[in-house]
Amino acid sequence: MIISVTNLKGGVGKSTLAQNLAVILAQKGYNLCVADTDVEQQTSMKWAGVRASLGEGSIADVPVFLINPDTISDQILNKLGKKYDLVIIDGTPALTELTTRIVIMSDLVLTPILASATDVWALDTFLKRFEEAKITKEAMGGKVELRVVLNKYNDRVNLDREIGETIKEMGVKLLDAKVSTRVAYKEATVQGLGVAELKDKNAQAEMAALVKELEKTIKQVAKAKG
Ligand SMILES: Nc1ncnc2c1ncn2[C@@H]1O[C@H](COP(=O)(O)OP(=O)(O)OP(=O)(O)O)[C@@H](O)[C@H]1O
Ligand SMILES: [Mg+2]
Image: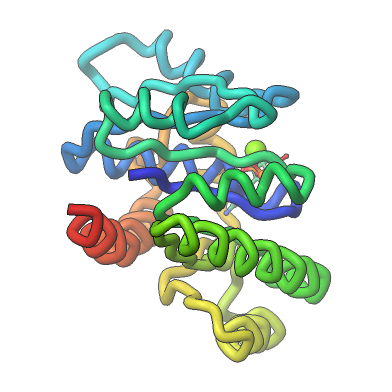
């Protein structure tokens, strides 16, 4: 199964969520890898480099591969898909066509967005592209699910809550789980870890809740794929 963490916008937490998702799912026993499609920044590749230096055995195994989004194909993904039950794509703030291709190759798309008006406007553009890609995928007999998650969310801020409501009104499936702004996410990235491997209980709990919610969809998709 291919899960892509993608959005047309940069800096919304794609890499952060891809890594944290991968760590928790690996801890739960999923045989998975991360495909970093950001050939410029290689955020997840760098994260994996730090992680590799921590020593085998002490942390869950999360292999990360660099895949050029220009040449990403079903063949490459099928190869990874044969070896791994889950391939988590860390998307780029890519050109529209690349994002379309990534959506077509995915079974589940997780789109992080920040609670701001500009991000909601950008989400509207992303949704149009997603729907086009979905129609193409369905014409080929495939299916793709979309879940949106609010990142750097503060539930004490009225505007953030209102933005959550606006997103639901756009007819997309917004996860109940939200991700707050926490230093733990930045710390985890530089240490090659997921927040599940740090001591911050709040970050651990919210990420566990997000994964628990997403796992329902993962299981449904896996069942539908047979
Ligand atoms: N919930 C959070 N709390 C605190 N910092 C966060 C959170 N989510 C992401 N960040 C930080 O925000 C920055 C952007 O996050 P990240 O690199 O994951 O975004 P991205 O969408 O992958 O960006 P790009 O489009 O450049 O690939 C990073 O410095 C990251 O550590
Ligand atoms: Mg990134």
